[in-house]
Image (cartoon, rainbow, N blue to C red; front, top):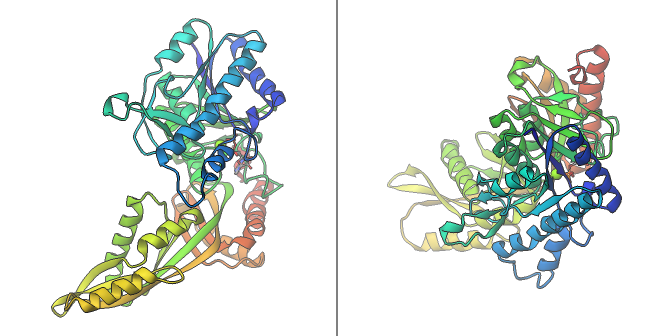
Length: 459
Ligand code: ADP
Ligand code: MG
């Protein structure tokens, strides 16, 4: 059996017309002699009756001061994809094809127990295979799974995090040994920048798994990074295509290590907060840094663009995590180097009031000679954004950082912090410069190189 997994995002199943366009891709796959397995997201974007955000708001709206139980949240939002599978299966039937609508659990997707951001632990796609054998088209709910029914959780419904339907598609592709996974969305493929931010963006014919994963990690939401990583691990070719569009789309395959230097694209992530912790004694920096990042990792907050100098430690977090982070760090006591008999005790102070910090300092001062208390204020810049240049062989290509800095300076966008990685160069900027920054970097690194014949589009 030549299996292909076809995934359709929220807008691709948003209206009856879009669903028909999507269903035509499925029918075409069948006519080409393949066995399609469909994965769908919830119908539409925020505001649509069963969209993920609508369901979330409905639950939160009961009483905004009472946070919902994470288990209930997952149970609630998972309904969006379940409704979508049934409607899509019915659309296929209306075209004369037999279909089986399956929830994530029915498709055999077992996850860990991290509600809201679960990871797939295993897939037993028995139901999907038996329905394929009967000539039916399985339509699987994306973004969700269940915990192992044997662990006492009774198979609780979990969700895989934003963009998780892409991951469902890749993981199903791996479990079914599919010959390809096709991600259908509302743009013609993976582009050199988000076309909403940069109208001059062009579709990339081909990218490696690592480049697309890096683009995704740096804010391009066209594909979930975990989806690219799974496809890479199992060597499954992945396509990103536009629903209802005749374009070939983008083939994701191969390794970045086999490519020459090229700039793949420009990405951006808005709604970033940058925190800077003052460290009074340079010799304590490493210890503080380690403790700080250990704590953030423990609560699963992603942090990036780490900048350290002798007097400070800086890092970026998504703005939506800011309240959690400041709450967690304010008042935190970190013991560092010894000063005389006792250690230096850094008391972190975060947020406007720093109430916990003040209380903690008083308690320590009253508790005898536990150590010398060093106040450590945490400054917050909460209207930042990150723009990144994604490129292969970044470290073997001198001059990238200088060119990026010059370009942003000419565009009048101050760079607050910069960091490079094997496949990316990221700049922290003020949010209000985001569009200008992306467009300027795109003109400099993509359009110019294209004219010179060295650009990414030629691959
Ligand atoms: P879906 O609901 O189909 O999963 P998403 O909204 O998650 O769709 O992803 C598609 C969107 O990703 C596009 O509408 C586009 O605005 C955005 N995007 C960001 N960066 C890129 C990029 N480099 N190439 C293509 N699309 C991008
Ligand atoms: Mg998506």
